[in-house]
Length: 62
Image 1: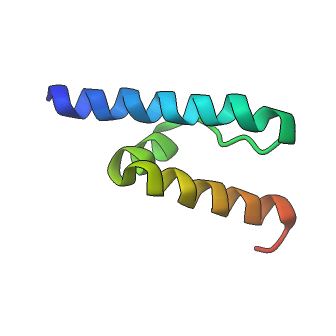
Image 2: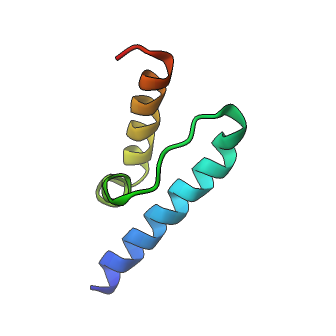
Image 3: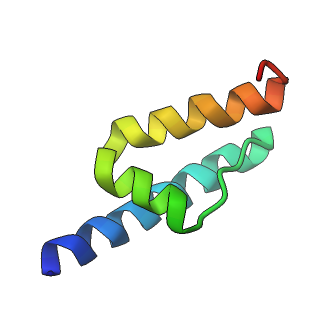
């Protein structure tokens, strides 16, 4: 149970720190249950996946 809570908190902090950095470029990822769950399950590759997906939507590729 402690391991799950640590992963969720780490995922939240990772998303929050990314949003602080990406705020200047207006490329923010919303912090909600889905994005935290993806980052908690996949760790850093999950964050990279979310960045790629949100950039694709931002640039209008999808």
